[in-house]
Amino acid sequence: MDWLVAAFLGLVQGVTEFLPVSSSGHLVLAEELLGVREEGILFEVAVHVATLVAVVIFYRRRIGALVGGALRGRPEALVYGAKLALATLPAVVLVLGAGDFLTSLYQQPLAVGMALLATGLMLITTRRTLPEAHDPAPGYGAAVLIGCAQAIAIVPGISRSGATVCLALALGVAPAAAAEFSFLMSVIAILGALVLQLPDLQAVSPGAWFDLSVGGFTALVSGLASLWLFVRLLEARSFHRFAYYVWATGAAVIVWQLYQS
Image (cartoon, rainbow, N blue to C red; front, side):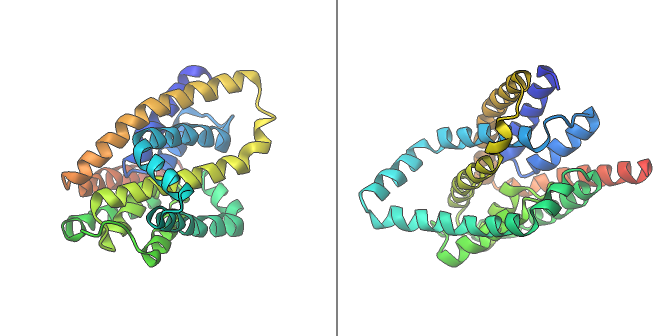
């Protein structure tokens, strides 16, 4: 992998991480088309960390208020933090129980295509649920269900932002609050993925570190722009329109894979 490929993959990650089109699915497809397999999951974790930084920058005031409130023992911050932690548990359980199977899906573009079709079905539901969603934050039960949606989105082709926000809207959480909870929840999930990959970092060559850095920087910049666009489109009630894109992409991938076989 040279730095131009790393920059391109970082751009793919940054643009698709926050838009509801599945960044993991697009990375699998981009790597398949380019014939890039050298860094695998490690590269994906690196660019996910970059988009995590984008989340922290975008929600820096909210994160600062939550951390400061938790340190002062304020109930509102402690309750919200507990909901975020609770929402992370389903993904942890799924990874521990089916980690090898999930990893194998990252080598199967056909599975990505089918998962993209499922993502489109979720997105189209927001045409009905979004106008009726007004709750300022999810309850504990809703937080667990949203966490289950995040766990399912480990499958490449299932959009994490799409699955979590779609379910949050269906449960009555207001659009801005749904996006905030989804992305703050991702901070914990991505940090967990980084911890799991720490042993592999010791084996990364100096040249690979440069590629990871280039991809990460590109993902950070494009991720900030993508996150801003995501929130604006959600407020404009245009979220469901992404369903047509993922349906078209998913169908194209399935035809491509069936033709190759």
